[in-house]
Image 1: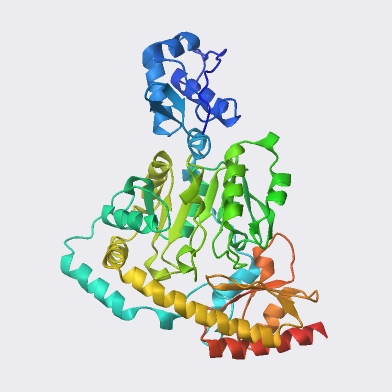
Image 2: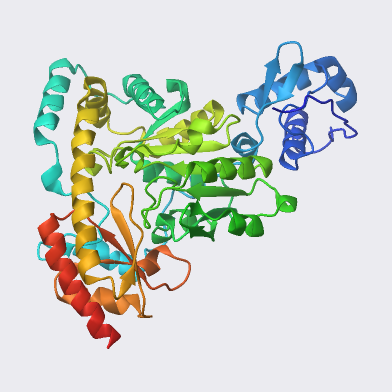
Length: 489
């Protein structure tokens, strides 16, 4: 795929400088990769020749190459010596931020006011939650959970701290689960996290420097949070179309000439939150090629991957051949958010580094939750429950669409989701969505205004069919239609 080519070196480290000579050589190589001068497949000179070119001894060269190898930036290639193996996430490791300075009081910015109100009102028993991103508690597999807990209880011998990457048993089970969607990931490339959200926190605090740019769909789940902004990162929205993130928009925002490593792309290609759209296979291949050419690392959020009603296109990670993608998965949407179990899949050096950071943040996700999740995956109960869950969500989606077709056709438009929880409803008349939010709340209906997911005011709202029965959804949606029509008048 990549042409093997020699390199030219006309630079020497400053032996009198404050930084170690081997560290200067590491930065030099990283800069060459970062700027694109040394693409993947570039062959490095022999150790002896590198020592001559840099004017150092072979021991210093060995130390620098060991460091580069630990990052996954280079690898030995039989018959071709040492070659550049990665040009995205691995380049970030030598430049990682001082994450410890972020994990302190005052690190997190406050949520938007409306998000704070939603978080509060979700616990009100009088509210019909028409926009919430959570499964109906009545769908919880109580008997399966009791069985899993019973099996774990009968075999448990201790509840000590887990390994830095998470229990090996669970990582093996997740590895086998990922194979079903085309992701080949050994346990050593998997980090167990306390939900997918913690994975984003670890990445933002330990791989990305303050001021880095996060490109993401517009609208996006990320914009309802403050995790990246709190780390000093800047979100830049990229328009979407019916097939997912717009390549034309992305090309305008990220021109080839500006390729650099202080930017990443965050995307939810399958059952997108909040729009419910699923990126087509062709768009996924185009996106991966685009990002590989620009050395733009990708964070793929697969939280809704297991909730596709029919076969979904392969995850970006499944077609990634050069380590461009870090994949995030979670049990929060497909089983139980209270387990607080998620997983991160990426290049092993990156996963190892994030595992070290996680140990210093919380010393590992709950051992008991990890055991329970492993039991669900190993026993087949997770797959069995997901068959039931997808069928029930499809039934609820169809019922919700029937209500919308009968009552909202004249006032709004929407796209039919292929899975997940959400319908993105866009009103035909321009209305301040916060007015709708407050008017609905007064009548006991909790909705999620589209503004909280966007980079500017929009005319949309996120409806969810996952938390209510079809009858509950119908009754609340009919009231919502009346509220909207009153505001239009």
